[in-house]
Image (cartoon, rainbow, N blue to C red; front, side, top):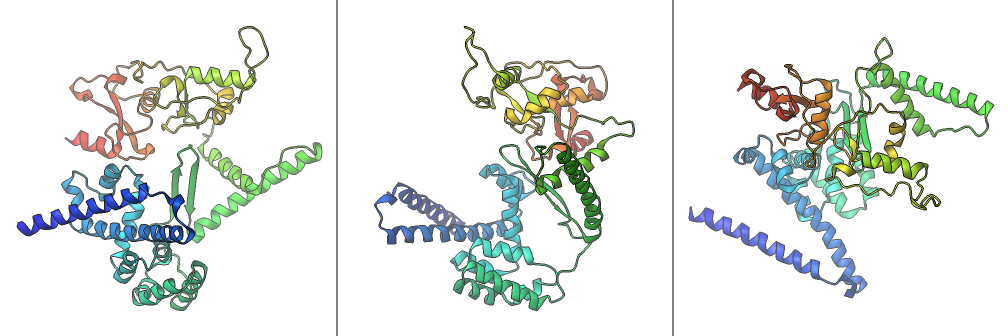
Amino acid sequence: MSNIHHQSDYVDDLLLRLDEVLGEFAELSLSTLDHTELDRVLNRSINLGSQADGLAFAAIQEAESAAMSLTFGNRVLTTHLAKTTRQPVRTIGGDRSLGLWLSDLPELHAALIAGSLARPHVAELKSIDSSLVHPFLVRDQAMLIEAAECLGWTDWMQVVAYWLNAVNPDGELSDPSDPNYGMRVRTKANGDVIVTILMDPVTGEAFMTMHDAEVKKIEVNERQALKHDPNAKTTSHVQKNLDALLRLMARGWRRADGSYPDFLVNIVMSEQVAEDLLARTFGHIDPDGSNPLNIDPFEIPIDWSDIDGRCETIRGTPVHPKHALGVLLAARLRRMVMSADSKVLDHGHDVRLFDKTQKNALLVQQRGQCALGTQAPFRWLQADHIHPHTKGGPTSLSNGQMINGADNLAKGDR
């Protein structure tokens, strides 16, 4: 027991010393350093980042093998670390994946901790790893590390390319069960959505056939428009690709009668922001009748915590009002009254299931997040009775919440 306490004290002492050193560097006036000293600090700081990654990966490996997350009430280590470090789940998940991958490549891991390799080297090798390549990667770790120590990034990548051709001359075979096939969606802080799609050759060929045909239709329409009006608007090839994909998706979403099962876009915008946006866009007259204000029409103060300043998607993603302007001008408006503490006023129905309007109201109230605090994708959220309906709980907003479907099933089982 004394040894355990001694080791715990030693770890605490190391972390305290590390904090102190980093604090001293933070207080250092870099402007007083000459170029040689500044270069030394800059290079060492970057290398320390990679070494810290290596140590974090080692801790991740140990935490996984010891099932540490269960101690803190989480089934998955990624969920625990995302909560305690307040970082995105995808960032922690990437670190966990890289750390567990390195557990089978101890020489690469040791080189990362020692500073001989940087994180991009390791990430690049992981990206080319496969069932065919892996045995050779385990065998040739030392050679790849030596090349990284001697060569710049571009030359090292060339070495890796030659090595990959040597160990896998037939190229990577397509595996229909590859878990990487599929679509990944990421929303940036400003609301932009990044979509990454990886398809197998057959599915990809089918997609390209449909997509190319749709792009050609757009190109034909633009050429015809230019014949009638030389100043007609044209789009870039990248924009045509996106427009073609959206047109294909919209046709699949449309019912046979031409209607849609739900609104494609749900924007939550306060009355104040809507009025301000329209006034600034189309001209605002001062009370004394003078000319419109000389202001930027889209410099609108938005406070995420103030319901009068809200402009966001139903998922809770903030949207700049200029992006919502087109929707506002052609939208079907639905009035929703909220209290000062952002609670939607009750308009419940005496029915078993929550209707679409109530579900949307709950999503607006929770900003598209699970009420239980779990990191659940938006599409997994389900309407749930806080006080069970079977025990007399009303189907009303005051008794409703949106939670992860798995949690909802587990709650029902209990």
